[in-house]
Image 1: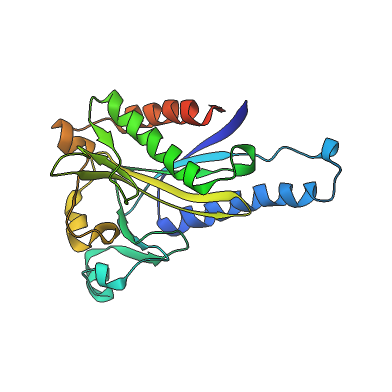
Image 2: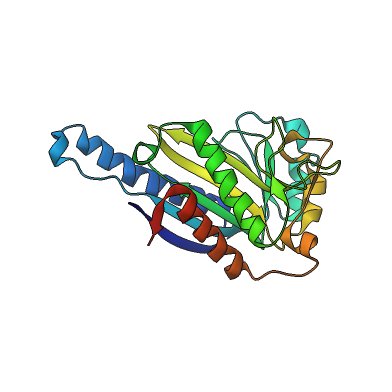
Length: 232
């Protein structure tokens, strides 16, 4: 069974988290690089990581994004104390903020399955199964990434955004699950470039604030189940 090293980074700026993701990526890549010079029986196993954190308010724009989906100027962002980054994950613009669980799985997919479509679906399933533990109807919407509440209704609502990058089969970035998130920030963007669907949070759906630690515990449990790993 694969093991995954868990780290909770607390609340930190997006730049610090991005830098740390790169450090962890480099650790895994260095092992892979060493292994290329060793015989198979001598090769070292590559480590896997799962990072949790919260971010100060920030909009991030993926490689496929359009600046038109950001409804504020850079000056207005500064006035509101919101950071902005153009980053190397896929997808469009999204928001990260306090009381949102951000998860960064940094995995060597050669330890699992070398298939990015599979990886996306498994990440979504982790969140879908977590939402079901809160007795919420969660699932996918055809043609769109992420996890939605009441996905088959006339009013599906996005509760979790997912965007990744993979290089040499090592993953970066991950998911952002709205727990007690201030959803008013999403009014300042067209989230993920999707104009006709709303966003939601656990707090909004359940009508009460939810302990972040409880959500983190349940997500970790589902991550272990879906990926068949032990989190250390």
